[in-house]
Length: 131
Image (cartoon, rainbow, N blue to C red; front, side, top):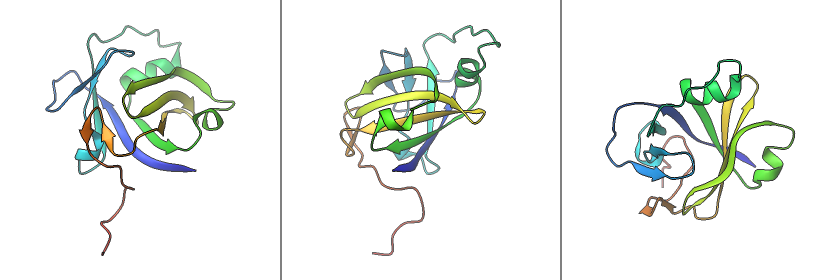
């Protein structure tokens, strides 16, 4: 199963509610709290990436699309892994790949109800249900 989770955008400006990710040395915002499912990523120090390393360059200079998956290993089989897999927080594991010309993040959640200790249950993107 693969389901849209968020869009990630790199910024140099501090954002409200950032959480620190030690592995990648970035602060990130909670995309579940953004009305358009945007996650802002702010590196402690912008890495210098050789443009010939196209996947890694795109990771730091272009947006990425993120999907929730049930099986991280299956999702990345045969893909060009550019970062990870790693556990950014208390909710699961992620990996970034260069696929079909874009950077894709796959997330395998172990806890769908939290984001860096914040109680923010995951829900599918789309219009609100009519319940």
